[in-house]
Image 1 (cartoon, helix red, strand yellow):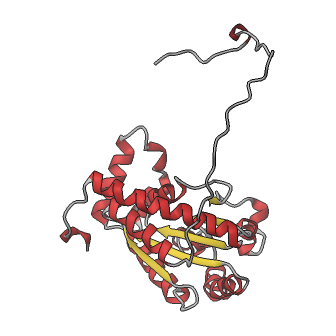
Image 2 (image 1 turned 90 degrees about the vertical axis):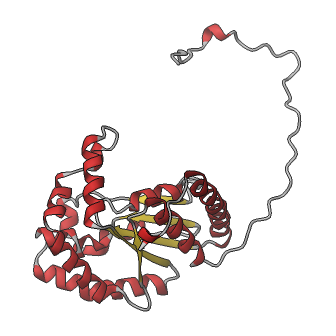
Amino acid sequence: MNGELPPLSKSGYETELLKLHEELVHLQEWVKKEGLRIAVIFEGRDAAGKGGVIKRITEPLNPRVCKVVALGVPTEREKTQWYFQRYVPYLPAGGEIILFDRSWYNRAGVEKVMGFCSDEEYNEFLRSCPEFERMLIRSGIILIKYWFSVSDENQEKRFKERISNPLKRWKFSRMDLHSRERWLEYSKAKDAMFEHTDTEDSPWYVVHGDDKKRARLNCISHFLSLIQYEHTDYVDIELKPIDKGEGYVRPTVGFQRFVPNVF
């Protein structure tokens, strides 16, 4: 899809990203003011670019308002709970934006493909997930779901980069190898997931991730378009002179420990 478009220059990308960051800050202030509750789910193929989008969304925002939730492997206790239970504590309160880096859809993807859940558990998830999400929406939560797609050629290219780059090696796991080996199984699982959970109440939005820069800009722009918000008018602030105090003598710098100037 994006292959027909000319390459996006670094300066052009950064200019558009800066505009979107300014809008994200306005959205953040509106969320705080109105007490909105926003939950955004990021799912998709490994190396499809969802992590890069999450990073660009959080970059200009207050981490007390916009939080990322990336849960690890469930504990033995959590495995015995109602499936959605471990995610409920992380749902947004008033004035919060929660970005789920993977979510309850693990059951419809990796758990299904890798055999980490039973067929009964999987089928129950497909039945109950739309109801669970309708309850969230009825409660006032704004729920947005993104699925990131990537071609197998680009995924392989990114996997090789992760393997060879020391700064990205941590991103590559044995599970990535398994997902690569089970490309078709993951495709079938994704199609079944969409069939059951791509509803009018809670639709999936697909992000084409082959072009990272465009994927980031397109996803953030789309996210902003789904929320009705107003720009914040900041009051003028005048910085008064610092009162350094008459007669106060500060301790000498010899009493302090400084970080060495190595660079």
